[in-house]
Image (cartoon, rainbow, N blue to C red; front, top):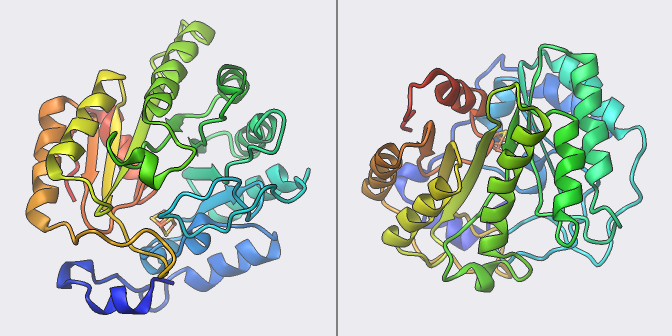
Length: 308
Ligand code: SF4
């Protein structure tokens, strides 16, 4: 899926892991196809698909294939409006997760700025369907920023009781306007902090909500700006952070600014440790949903940094 010229120049450390023979890759493909579902693994051309699907995990993408934003780095198709919502999608996602035998599921969505509630109710129905069908399942939601309906949407989603709340900040403050036309650095930070606050108001008897965010590097930021972004995330009580290399999806997308060296990823892990994140996954092929169960367990178990 990545643009050919860019892929040819890839350094050694960007080599992807293929699915191993006898893995669950084909079984997973059938489950996804039979249920008519979408995965961000395919839509975004994730380099880890061989490894993750081979292990039987995938990240579901709900509310269609068309995103109403057009972030310059993203491979997902964009348009003014998305497809009509499939009322059966929550049940289909729940059935697929059960068939896959998942203990931890990651669900994300396209941005649906065209819907009055920005898709919040569909999100809530999906979380509820997953929890009802597989009561032991841990549900991680990687949500959009619900632009214009933030507070109401957060309450709707949190009332459905996800286990991990993830919203990706994607990049540093300086280049945010350039790469995310409709994104906003401070709005992303606010959303993450507000989710935690609202959770405590909704469920004062429970522990805090586990929150998480991801950064893509290689889009024009400096290492210091990555660490500054991590500092801002911690200042907004984020527990888990992921940092991974940008891959330019096509010639039309934001040009790759640099291959971030392994030494920088080591620096990010050390910085994350010092900042007190519950888990830091930082490495060239790390994606927000990559080995998400391990990220959660590390944060919950207090093992702090799970370096990658
Ligand atoms: S890292 Fe996430 S998006 Fe990529 S293949 Fe794995 S589960 Fe899918």
